[in-house]
Amino acid sequence: MSDRRIRGAGTRIRGADERSHRRIGLVLFVVLASACGGPDGEQGAADGSAPAPEMRSAEPAGEADHFVPSTPENVAWGWFPIDREPVLRIQPGETVRINTLTHAGATQSEEPVAYLTGLGLPRDEILQDVLDFWASREGRPREGRSGHVITGPVYVEGAEPGDVLEVEILSIETRVAWGINNTSARGGVFSMDYPGAHPDDPALDIPPGTRHVIRTGDVDGREVAFMSDDIQVPLAPFMGILAVAPDPVVGQPGVTVPGVQGSRPPGAFGGNLDVKDLKAGTTVYLPVFHEGALFYTGDPHGAQGDGEVSGTAIEQSLSGVFRFAVHKDRTIAAPRAEDDEYYMIMGIDLDLDRAVRHATWEVVNFLGEEKGLSPADALSLASIAVDFRVSEVVDLTQVVTGYIPKNIFLR
Image (cartoon, rainbow, N blue to C red):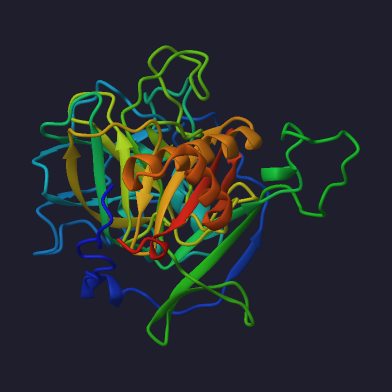
C-alpha cells in the first residue's frame, strides 16, 4: 500500500428519491419473543398487500459504471461460493454500486411483512428485496452456512491467485430509515460458550428474544440513530463483510462441509471482519485465492462499536459504491486497509491473544516492507505509536486491528 491520499474519499452520491422516503422518528424499543415458525426454509403465506417500493431498485444515473441489486439471484445465504457464476464481470478501475440486504427481517421463519410490522415498522418501509429473498429461501443449502445475506460475486478481470485485490470504498448509504439490534442475557460476549465463561456467571435481566428497532434520520445535516429522546448516535455505515472467495479447508474456522466457508468467522479472505472503520473513504486490500478474485459484500451496519459485544450492530440495509484494482507486485497474508489518517493492519485468530500477536507481526512486516524499518525498529515503533484495537470479538475468530498513524512519517 502506498502512502497516498484516497481518490474520491468520502464522496456523497445519494439519490434524491431515497431521501424522500426518510422521516425522523423515535426509537421503538420492542421486546418480543423470537418469531416461532417452521424450520429454516419453510415459507408462510403472503398477506396479499400491495408490494413495497424498492428504494434502491435501479441504478441512480451517473453514479457508477455498473449496478448489482440485492435480488435473489445475486445473493448467497451464509457462505462464499467459490464456483458460483459471477453476477458481474468488470475491468480494474471500474466502479460498481452494490446493494446489500440485512439478514434482520429477511431470514426468520415468519413471513417478513407480518414479522416486521409486528415490530412496529410501517409496511411501506419494507424493501421488496426482503420479500423476494424470503420467498427464495426454500432449496437454498444451509448445512455449514451462517445467517448473512451476501451480494456477489463480482469478477475482476486479471486477478489471479497470489495477487492483491484493492477495494476502494467510495460511498456507503442507508437504504431504509431503520435497523435492528438484538440483545439477550446469554448472547454475544455473555454466551455460555464464550471463551472464559463460567457456569456461575450472572446473567443480565433481558427477556428472551429482545429486538430493538432503531429509527434513523437526518438531524442538522447529520444522519443519526434515535436511541431515545435523550440519545442520538451518529451513523457511520459500513459493510461488515468485505471478502474474496476463500480457499476453504475442513477444520478451519467456519468450515465443516467440504468447499463451504460459513460467513460467521472472518479470515485471510476477509469476510465478516466487522471493522467499523472500513467505511467510505477507506481502501481495503485482500489476498486473492481464485481467478477473478470473486468479491462479495454484505452484513450491512448503520453503526457499531468496537467489539460488537451484543453480537449485532445496527443491522441496516445499505448500498455502496466500490472501485477495484489488482496488484501483481505484492502479496499479503491478511486483510489490510488505509484511509487518509491510518494504515490498518489486521490480525485474526480464534484466540484474542493470538489475534494481537498476529496483528503485531503484520504491523512489523508492513513497516519493514513499506517504510524500510528493521524488525527491531518496527517493533519499537509499534509499541510507541501504533494503537491495537479490538475490532470484533463475537464471530468465532476475533479481529484485532493495528492503527498506524500516517502523520508520523515525514516522507
